[in-house]
Length: 104
Image 1: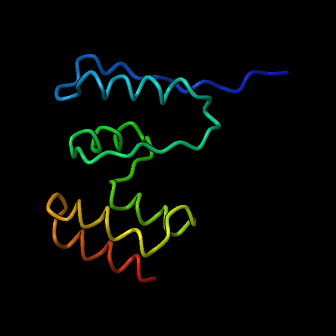
Image 2: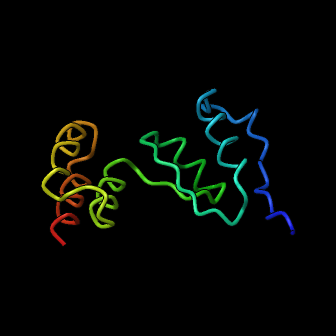
């Protein structure tokens, strides 16, 4: 049996603004075989920009909530509570978009 390919872990030790928790999360992400479908959830814009540069799939928490509803993990009626808790942390246009997405 052949081992699945390993994800190549980039050296981010010199990347400004990446804290120990984010480095640990990236190490965990890279510890999974390359064939695994993984996505990181974060609300840190700089970290999200880094993930995009590294071509690592990522979602913001509000979009993750919508995904959970669409995939049946969270009832639509229960999605408004976490979204209301995030409302002050999300740009108004983003919040409106998430609410429209939930209506689809």
